[in-house]
Amino acid sequence: MAKKYGPVGLVHIDAHSDINDEMFGEKIAHGTPFRRAVEENLLDTKRVAQIGLRGSGYTAEDFDWSRKVGFRVVQVEECWNKSLKNLMSELLHHIGGKNLDLPVYLSFDIDGIDPGFAPGTGTPEIAGLTPAQGLEIIRGCFGMNIVGCDLVEVAPAYDTTGCTALLGANLLYEMLCVLPGVQRRS
Image 1 (tube, rainbow, N blue to C red):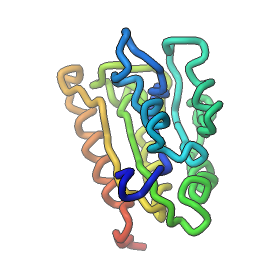
Image 2 (image 1 turned 120 degrees about the vertical axis):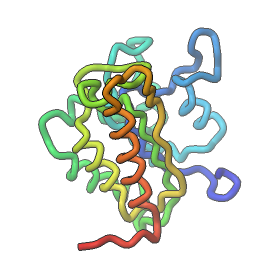
Image 3 (image 1 turned 45 degrees about the horizontal axis):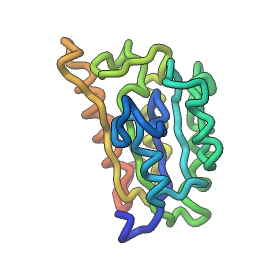
């Protein structure tokens, strides 16, 4: 992707910032990818938003590094009890560029959603986003030049109801619907 687009913008929905330098003595782990991406010049740090961050973290400075390198950090408290349409309107041109032509990657960690709705994940954190807010974030990316996306950390073994997998599948479908060239119905 970097060879084709250069550094990309990022919309990252997660309970955790995933910017640790190391986890359990390892440089490559599920909590380190975005630090590695910055180090490898894969992200345009001024066009990155991390939405829904919360939780116990690993250090008191968990979100400081993100802010220091230029990420827009939206802690979950900023999202409670309200629609995220205004947030996404604000981020649309900030991340997508003035003409919405700059490349953007969309990454959704299912633990960004409150475990009351998505218990099937390895690192659940209480007081997260609602499924409706997840939809607002994804749908708010419509018009951006999305060049790739993912949904991670669904763990069906931790959810006997299957609701996490169902939510994950629906969120992925919504991501496909905001890719460039997809027509919308009124």
